[in-house]
Length: 191
Image 1 (cartoon, rainbow, N blue to C red):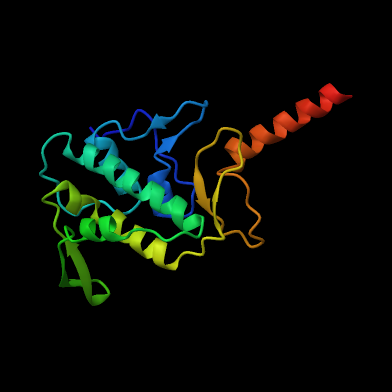
Image 2: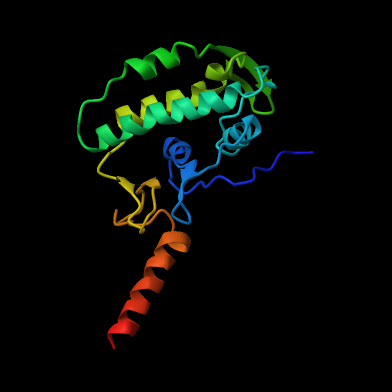
């Protein structure tokens, strides 16, 4: 039977690093952690297209602890980068030294191609694609387009890839509609 998380992850940030940070959400005002067990982390990695090719062989609970640790390492880096402040890259660089990978020539219906194979012998190796995506993100993203949701009490982030770059909500269905309903009720009270 395939694992389904108790709290399903949200993929609405338009970037996997922000989606990873958004695995802590506050839909009813109280923070909720999407990562409750190793299987939740593996589920998220699969949905994000970052899952290991082979079945991980790590101690029970190690992946959960490592995912939470990586997430909390990245959170202040995001805030500092968003504020235009210098970030300390040493911890992320040290993390990425655990990422062991190698190129491999494979054949397929389209002919030959080179694929990168990753080792998944430790929790750090399993999460290395997230760390590498974070490094790319911090180096190349336009942080004028990285925004926190304007929803009341919302703690989610998103990368505004809209044409007009005027996105305000993590999701129109979640915070956008909630804002519209509150504004409507406010207008009703005033009249």
